Structure formats: structure tokens, C-alpha cells
Length: 338
Image 1 (cartoon, rainbow, N blue to C red):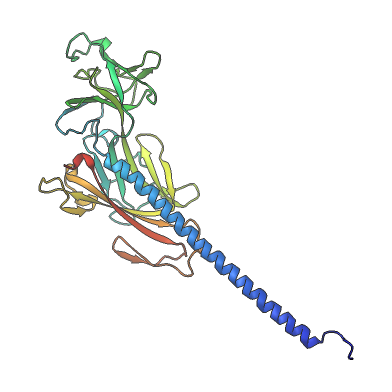
Image 2 (cartoon, one colour; image 1 turned 120 degrees about the horizontal axis):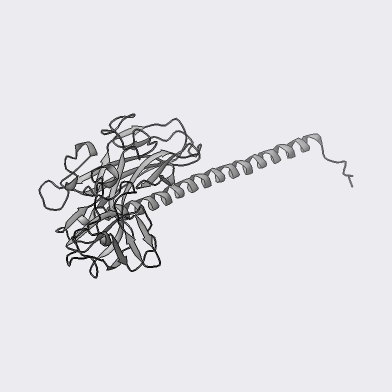
């Protein structure tokens, strides 16, 4: 019977090599699985962000031009001092700026739109986006409320929640409506004051020109602008600006936005063609809006090589290895549809 004299050097070397090969295989599988997970996670995040953005755009665009009543045949009086400037032009439900080059738009963006990234379109929507509160009283010394006596500059409402001085609101029914700025809110008496002076833009008159007590409601009216700018981390993001408030970041990683407008040129309430903003001669003809978003992963080195993509009619190969996807949706403006 032979005695065991130990393991030879050759056997040790073979075992070490086999172990290294096995370890390398395990590491390779781990790295591959991790990369697969990163790609899947980035793709899932892009889809989630796209769904969120399209839902948000859908809600706002479908309400564009809605001023508290579905009928189109009613008189609307804008009592603001400034009725044609960008923030208060409520006669224009939808408008946009076309990025005509990598450094300019067809029209210079309003000063309220801060730090927009060039080469991206800008979309503005105006309408009623808040909850309505019934108007319960409107003091006046005339039956038709057209006398602008000092005691007519207030409205009694069912609820003042969410209303504050400086808000732009619309009071109305399905035959008439009046746009004005709130100058004071008295919560104890549920009263909204709409005096002249002391506000920006302020009211040109306190006479609303109609009675809304009993059959009218009060709602906030807003100008909302969607555009792309860099966030504090230096990444492109989609922002939404409400009126004169600071713009709020909605989604990080929105690299580009291009918008086409469906215009009705034969008065049949449906779009005959889709054109960029610089080809829209009459914004009241816009019945639908087509939005294309280019989303990128927030992390680099997701793909094995730079990923070529087609966006806005051009094929682009970036210098990084981020994952990118394009999402496009068309939204009808309900207030313009039959």
C-alpha cells in the first residue's frame, strides 16, 4: 500500500488555473448581469418618465382655452391693465416658439421664461386649471351690476380655499365672463376683493360688467409654459412655469422637445396639417398639438457604444453612451373640437 506524499506542483498549478477560470467566469456573469440590470432599469425609468410627462401634457393641453364653460358663444371681458402681454393674453389658448437653429427661436422668448436651452421648442398653454367655487353674492347698487360703485368691488364665494391676493381669476357663467386680479381675500366673510391699484398687473376697473351671483363660479386662470433648461445638477430637464411663479422641474433627462401644431384651415374643427410654430399664422386655428420628447438616461455608460437615434428628421450619434428614447403623442384641444 502506497503512502500519500502530498500534492505535486503541477496539480497545484492546475487547480489554481481552474479556480481562476471559474472565478473569471463568475465575475463575467456578475458584470453582465449588472449591466443588463442597469440597461433594464434605465429603460424602465425612461418609460415611466415618458408616461408621466405625456399624462401631464395631456391634461393641460386638453384644457387649453377652457374658461369655465363649454360654450364658445359668450362674452369675455378682461379687466386687467395688461391684456395683451405674454402672461395675460388669455385670448390665445395655445402658442409656441420654434427653435429655428441651435441658438435661436423664431421669436425671442418672454423674459419670464428663464434660461431656456436653445434648439428646443417652447410650448405655452392658457386656460382654467383649478377647481371652481360658486359665486354666492355680488353687491351692487344696480340690478345688472354694471355700476362700478365702491361697494361693488367684491364677490361672495362658497369657498376661498386656494385663493389669495395677486391671483388671476375668471368669474362667469355660460353667457358672460370677466377676468380680473384678486386684490384681497377675506376668509372669515368668504369675500374676494377686486379693486383697482396696488397690484401687478392690476385691474383697470372694478366693474365686472355683469352679475354672476347665483349662476356663476370663480376659478383660477393660468398661463403655463413648458420648456427645457439645465437643472442645478447640470442635466437637461423639462420645466413648467405657472404665471409669474418660478419654473418648477418636472422630469430630469429630457434632452429635447419638438412641437407641431394641427391647424384647421377649412373650419371643420379638425386639423388639416401639422406645422411648426413659425408656420402658424392664426393660433385660433390650432385644434391639436403633437409633442415629441427625446429622453436620455441620467447615467452615462449604459450602452456598449454610442447609440444613434433619429429625432426631428435627423439621425444623430452622440459622444456619450447614455440610453435614449423618443416618445411622441398627439393631443386634441377639447375646447376646439366639435
